[in-house]
Length: 392
Image (cartoon, rainbow, N blue to C red; front, side, top):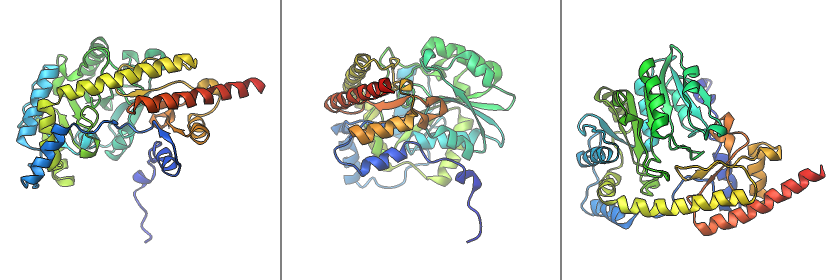
């Protein structure tokens, strides 16, 4: 064939995380702290509901927007947690994970040349999805000294007359940063004044360790301009079930559902029946897992203090983002050497944006025993680097 492939796709870089997944798969006895996946099994009562659905032959397509019972439970959940009502018949669509919701949400909003503001470091899919939707990504480089929170002056400086959407990635992957109500109030005032949309990715909303997560959609005048994205992967340990959802005004959901209809048809049926059970009776499971994550979070923060490695305290998700700039090497070089010399896999910070350079993402969605051994190896590695730097 002589016809060239899509230049747009060819120019998108592969995920910066993938290289380390491939390296780990070729090595033995590696402790992997690189994957953002809970180490808990999906709670039994949720699995049972999926099994029961299969036994009863509930293996057919659902409606494009998802099971009515699931949309009703999503509506109840958002109302209970955030005080915001979404009509299950017109303001909710069930998707194949939160990632599909990001994709179809941007495609529903964007016209060619519109700008999408993306604070980084953040989830690796935002920028490629914006490009695939024919938007121009505008990057805001978040700062460690601000605890990686989005500041009003940073947002104002990024807005132009072409700005269409702000992606709000909190609680944040990879930093663990959160935005509290006071932070969101300031951002919301700018959003309303400048008349732009917000895509609020709240997949880690249940994993907030310093008070309950607040959605920007719950603030005055914000529901009508927000796409709220969430899912079941992180809170309910349901990554492989591939189920998420988006809540937004009906005119937006109608267009998102149209794209979903042609590209996907519907989310996995078995997963949807299981998710109804998760929302109805999963609160205690979430609390148990959250308590365990919080214990691991505190352990890692103390471990970094002991090895005198700078790291701000994260209050969301299940990641820490220690600074490694003192070693005068790139994040990728540090992560590669750490893997090769100590057999511990972490993700270089620049995989989540250029401003992540000089940091390392470590996931604590792993057992405390694995984390303890990994930190023992990391301390040994850091001490060896410091000793080497002294001799130079």
